Amino acid sequence: MELLDFARGPAISVALAIFVFGTVWRLVALFGLPRMHDLSVPRPGTPGPIVAGTKEIFRRMWPRHEFSQLSMFSFLNGYVFHIGLAIIVFAFAPHILFLKGLTGLHWPALPNNVVYAVGAITVISLLAALIHRLTSPVLRLISTMNDYFSWFITLLPVVTGLMAASHLGARYETLLAIHILSVCALLIWFPFGKLMHAFLIFISRGTTGAFLARRGIQF
Amino acid sequence: MNAPVDINKASAKFLQVTAEHLAVYMEACVRCGLCAEVCHFHQASGDPRHTPAYKLVPMTKAYRRQSGPFAWLGLAPKLTEKDLTEWEELLFDTCNMCGRCTIVCPMGIDIASMTAAARQAFVAAGLGPEDLEQSAQNSLDHGSPLGLTVDKLEERIDWLADDYEVDIPLDKGKAEVLLTISSIEMMKYPDSVVAMAKLFNAAGVDWTFSTKGYEATNFGYLAGRADIAKAMVERIVAAAEETGAKTVVIPECGHAYGVLRWGGGNIHGKPLPFEVWHITEYLAKLKREGKLKFKPIDGKVTYHDPCQVSRRGGAKDDARYLLESFKEFREMEPTGNYNWCCGGGGGVQAIQRSAEIRYKVFRIKMDQVEKAGADALVSSCANCRLTMDESKAHWKWDHDLVSIVEALADAIDGPAAAKD
Ligand code: SF4
Ligand code: SF4
Image (tube, rainbow over all chains, first blue to last red; front, side, top):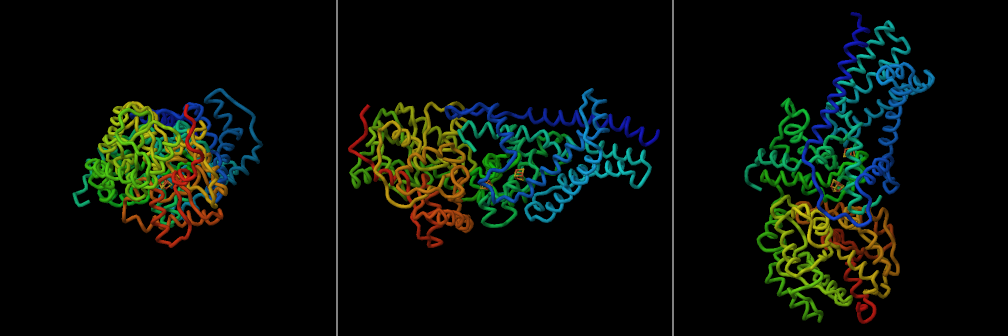
């Protein structure tokens, strides 16, 4: 079997299965833990947990002006690579084709050159994030292998994708196979490490939103 | 403490206190470090160890090892004695459970809840600052952290009632409102107790103190002693049941309010049989009902929001309503739910070895007050006041610290309230 056949065939299927089952398993394990039933009486007139939790998910998308002393680098750079990754995954024609094969859904793509430019910006932004992590005393102290490995496994598909698109360094088929395998690695790692924050963000923001709203705290 | 550190007990306690929402918090941290920038301890020390997210390490380790989704693999490292001894200072001396980091965290992680849960595990292991633990033990054994026994309470109330010629009911039988005391007030700022009595009497409130349950502070909760936390709540429940009070008022103490108002039912195991009000909320209610009126008060003042009343309590607006009586009130920056802390909440004030860092934290407050152009700093928490008084003395700062209750009691307008 050619490397590309392996990557497109069993590798991606297994990786997707691990991604789905791993993610579900991790969420089930979380929801299986004991829940705290808050017996305090909510402040009258405050919104219920669903409304408050949903509001909080949106509210936290930008820091409050009261915290203007915050270094905005983390926020801005975070937005750059998250949006960049979203554009690459969901707006590149070959990726849309792949997703159509999986889900049956499809939508218009952005021109390839635009996506390549976004890819380059995303790589720069991810590199900046790493430099920030390595040079800030706070980030250096609190970072774990999970952070560095998750960073690496996120960067890899972007770099290999750009290499494949520009036919850089090897045969196109080989580069494409490597790119698909790097996506497999990302999918397999996803449920085990920090990348799970893509799902957990809704739960943690929502939980805190409900907690604060119960007390009548508004931001 | 000198007893050996019991890792197994700590691990078991971590497991017991890890509810779903705390596990989500542990799993969700992306280690972005933004929380460090808003925590006054990190701000004051510049020490990266004072990063709020770093406090999660021991609890996260225990969780991953014991109940995380991949715990069954047995690969996660074990909690060690070193983890616990190293983190004791971070979880006790340098966290006020003030929730300032909670508001900035992009993931919405509530470090304050984690600190409260983690402290219980440290205490189970035989750790925790001795003076804080002693304050909790005193509360259980003698009724209050500062030695305010029933005898002393009776004696001091007699003295205050005589000296200030004010009626201070104690165990008067049935009453609609049970007022509680922070022993910090009774021992260090007794004028506050007199002020509350004057205000309630002027408004015609049917109230009493009770020897059965008088201490509002809950050092059991702050010190990670769930047993003492429960005993303290039960005492107030018993006092309210005996007096028939459907309203319990917490004096100027933020954490006392936070623990009873928002945690009391959970500690008690069922909803509390009464409403809990902070004194500023209750005075605002009396003012709204026209039962209290105040003369304008002189002086350029600003307001220090006790974290548990404003940011964690949701009661910042009632304080502002009362502050309207000050002729020259000005907000500091940032204010309300975003205000900086005094540095002494969450039991930190009771930890002697934390004094140096508390002084450093107070410099942020001094700067805020000076920038606001205020001569005096009004607050509604005796614990904040004590913390700030000590820091003020340390820096020989010349601004005044004022209790909102005392200032309002001196400004009561008219003979008494409406009689309805
Ligand atoms: S701000 Fe939140 S996500 Fe970022 S390091 Fe702190 S706790 Fe973790
Ligand atoms: S709760 Fe307050 S004191 Fe504790 S880490 Fe957060 S900001 Fe700092």
